[in-house]
Length: 163
Image 1 (cartoon, rainbow, N blue to C red):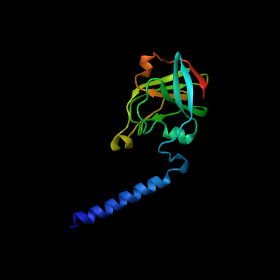
Image 2: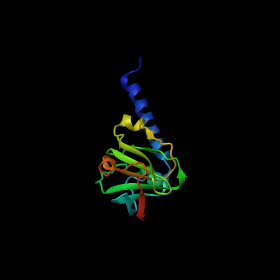
Image 3: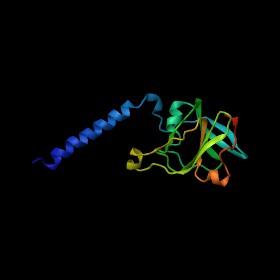
Image 4: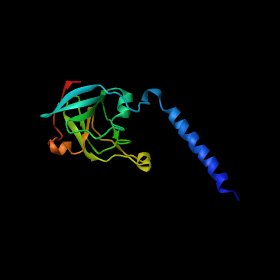
């Protein structure tokens, strides 16, 4: 019968190998722990927000991961290269978010309220994605409660002031 150490050592070695292989398989341009995002200003209906701009694939992948909660006058705007159906997830985000999808005319076409973060290892492994079946060009992430506080709804208008 195998001893505890004879079992634990190969299991631990395998875990390290899998972890290292996983890190090495991530494309180099997405390995951004804390990126500097360009800053901009937008307006949603009558609310002006300062936003971080996620306009490249590495920035969109990183999103609000590892950042602290934002005040209601701040957010992150995801800008895509073309209109399409885009999903979002909450892996490594530290606080709940409201998410708003906007079409190419800046009209809100879908809203998700109070989306919970995936913080624990188990949650991160099973973190669901939000996949609305709407075409969008922009997605705005803001602190949960923003949509209700400012009465944002489908049909609300996004204006890019300095993006």
